Image: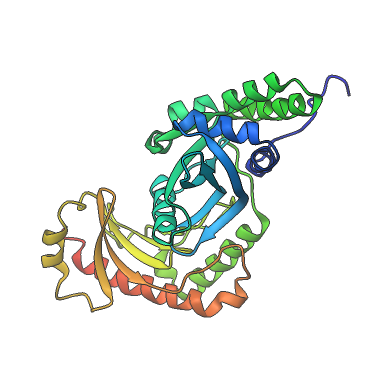
Length: 310
């Protein structure tokens, strides 16, 4: 046993809770963390929370509110990654949650920070969008410098997460999310076979956007059900800067509840639908699922009609 690693694998939740504890119980660590990303001195910490969710803009792995020595109240939103794939538009949604906090007067200013292994920060495209980044290696070094047996143990856990990243990405299935996706797929297959939803394998907790690419569509287009956001999109790549052109093509084919929005470099025809929580029971949200699929079916009909025009 002496030759075995002390832990088989490290999950992002393990690191979440480690950082949650340090930010909560160690003011020195909190001050160090903030000084790494901005030129602010922390006066006091109001609170630190794990897994805070907004219905429109999704989840923050960690959130904190603190007051600086000049009296300003700051929000700190932290995204933690070991090796999992990023969710679409994830950095932007963190910033939207930060702006919402300012609007709601929860804080006066906010900071968004990614924590991840150096290799992840260097190689992942989404990681480059974060203005503030602290590497696992920097956190490991800080914990080692503390010198206590407890901090050295935590540094060892961080080091294992770094090594895990170097070995490559492996899915960490979430039982509740996987169960929801399987039932969602069964309903799609029975009632909307034309959507050609592939069978979902084990799903990690981040899996929130069922994606449909039926053969009847233009090869460039796809349908997406953004569960928690509460929208269904027909995404058309390359049309993000051609909204007016797209509007002329579809204006006689869409009803008043369909809007045309820019989604990155794409343009999307969008229908608002009830938000769905992938962690909750499929059965309890069945009526919401049915509304979502009805919207998907409407958008697919439009997509088929315009596929030779685009």
